[in-house]
Amino acid sequence: MGLALVPVGLVGVTLVLIAVQGIICVLMAAPFALALAALGGALGYAIQARHWRPKQTPAMFSILILLVPAWFGAERAAALRPPVYEVRTAIEVNAPTKKVWNEAVAFADIPPPKELLFRSGVAYPIRSEITGHGVGAVGAVRQCIFSTGPFVEPIEVWDEPHLLKFGVTASPAPLNELTPYGHIDAPHLHGYFVSEEGQFLLTALPGGRTRLEGATWYHNAMWPATYWHWWSDYIIRKIHSRVLEHIRAQAESR
Image (cartoon, rainbow, N blue to C red; front, side, top):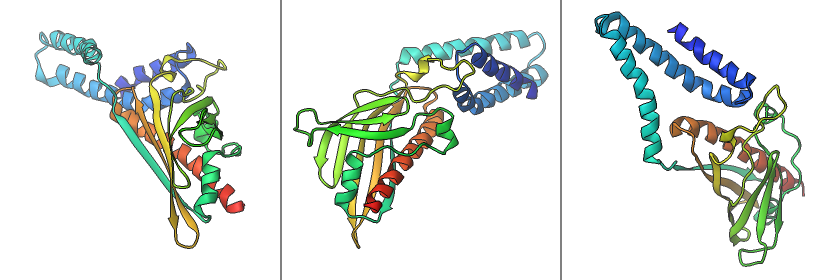
């Protein structure tokens, strides 16, 4: 079984060396790829060792090999729509809702990240800006500036100081690939991880405090969805925490 893992490692290194993929994406895909390789190695060993006579072994291997492109073709023909996921993160702020609202709508520059996740290239929020006020105002658009570019977020609900909800009409790449070549523009960086909506929900608490909740609705077109859903949720929660902690610090300091 261990021998089956070697080609996966070689493929990963090759993808990085020929500038098809970056190190971050290869590392993210590695657990799933290694698990499949281990399963394939175990199945292959079982086939050749016990279940079929030697004359039948080549035929069985041929069937297994043909199943892979057949599966990919069936998946493409099905045109499966990726599910929309929801991620919510909440904190409590020692400040009234009005102060928290002002910081949530548009916040100043967040200090550079200390987290390894963001320092290695995953996109992180820097600041947010807004033009106009209220959903009916001309140009009521929020922009959340990330390290890879801006999210363009038209306001959908402006219920001051309780709920700010916005759509997403444009979004930047989810990361800058970590690569020895400075920069690569891998195809999966565009149109696969898509943020659809977001919101800030503020709830007044006793003692002039506020519960601040950030929510994101997104889809990820990379398959299998369950595996990449875990990674996406983890990254979004880290992004939420970075923004919410900054809003709390700003609101409590004023």
